[in-house]
Image 1 (spheres, rainbow, N blue to C red):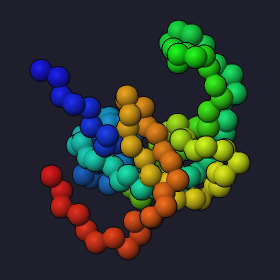
Image 2: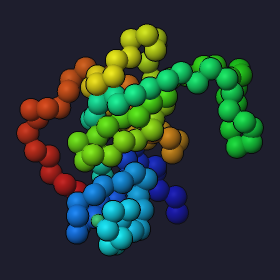
Image 3: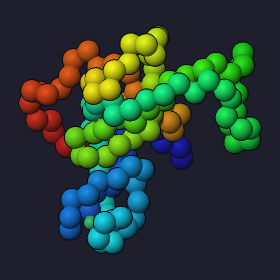
Length: 129
Ligand SMILES: [Zn+2]
């Protein structure tokens, strides 16, 4: 009965004050009203970033096969006003710029972001499922 994991970012939004959060939460952090699940935007901008140069404590961190390698990690700001921490899939962290457009997806339960070559700014509306 397993469902294929979605690559969407499942967040939550408050109907009362329109605050959005990630990951989803039951109560609004601003007004305490109940929140409902939403699919967050997959396009955002890089808010800030850094490079993780040493292996996080294990457990809970599980080193990949071949051992730990430094990786970039940062916060992506979405149009909903949410900042999502994501692993940054870039060949060279020196190419990262604060404010650059990025695309976010979820892989293995972890948000991952990469440079967005086609920012969605002017894209027409999409249907909601
Ligand atoms: Zn609220």
